[in-house]
Length: 153
Image (cartoon, rainbow, N blue to C red; front, side):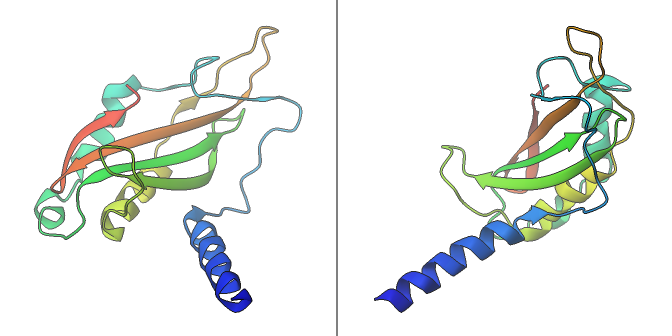
């Protein structure tokens, strides 16, 4: 009984660890706070339409439509420091009713790698005018391999 519990705990912990994309070179700015994605405003050059274009340009629809487990929501979470650098990537996956599931690994890997190549982040400032660190995420709604929506807009 104890051995079974230990194995289950090990599997859960290892799946959590391996779902995170570790980058030991990324550092948040020490002298400032880390804020949520919505306040103060974190922007990117070109705004949302450039972000949408960034993902749609190389999206391999013909490949992804033929895969099993190709419907759901993939969320890529990360942080942007006060210098506009990105790191601390992690992912979550669920179906359209927000129950955990797994979309094909190749689809997930596409969104993680494309997110890592986003540039041009413009960090926001707090009430005192200090540039701050931010939490950020993008959620990708995939239906039968087709990218149907990117959130938040």
